[in-house]
Length: 99
Image (cartoon, rainbow, N blue to C red):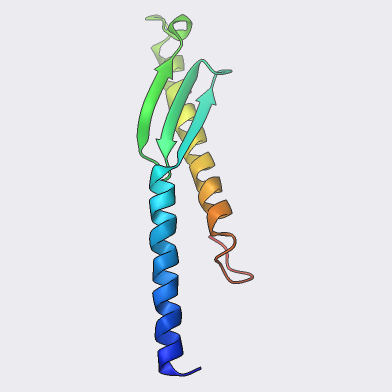
């Protein structure tokens, strides 16, 4: 492989990375906890876009449970965003290369 071919290959890899980053930034992934009592939507960059809490789960006597549900929903959404990234990158990575 000559230098020109390598440069072209690097340029293509950069373009693929740019496309993937744009796709992931536009992706929306929902996570939840408590059987859907708390739901969170994140983008591919794992930024929280929305949080919904069922009014039935709100109790001034059990704030700790609500906090736990929020954290669990965020973690679930972020894990799903990671899974989506791995799925998107699967076709781009060389064999044996894991994220």
